[in-house]
Length: 226
Image 1 (cartoon, rainbow, N blue to C red):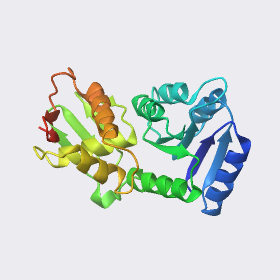
Image 2 (image 1 turned 60 degrees about the horizontal axis):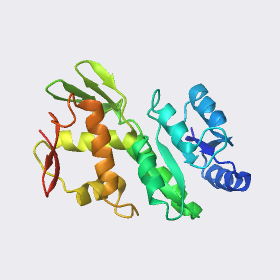
Image 3 (image 1 turned 90 degrees about the vertical axis):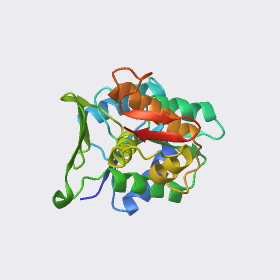
Image 4 (image 1 turned 90 degrees about the horizontal axis):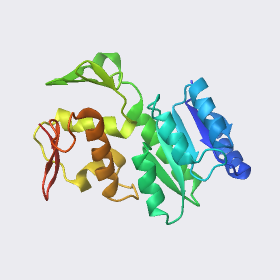
């Protein structure tokens, strides 16, 4: 069955072009043209990924992303205006997994979607396993995280960062290496992306993010799990 994508943009020509291209690759595409419609569709349906423009009527993309993160970890890719670095950072702060800058090449959009889907699809049952450390437990097949038996709602990228670190305890990863491993060598963003995700991850899994128990900083070097 083809992957299901929600495309959210108030520019109908952009939506039409993305939809046509993704359907050519066998994906099922749903569309929304304002923030309220997008939020309702995400509540009512299960999507594999959401392409979400920032500048939307009724609710903007940041507001939609923030509200979605209260009930869903669906991967969200923000569509941002060219050169608007603050929009990219804010998108990550509100829970987006990635961003694509307008104007974009549709081939880049499709490549980014497929890369995220490859990383977020469930593992084969033969390779499924759980990872545990202290009060933390990772369900690698279901891509779920529990701390003290309480489920923590992580985004796709937050889960991937945590999974990499917990699988390699005490190994320090530089921000550059995390960016390359998790986001890919061709990712156009910078290391601030990593910092934002680490901060969000700590806010979710640590009792006291300023004194982390799990995800630590090696000053001047990078991050590690202990």
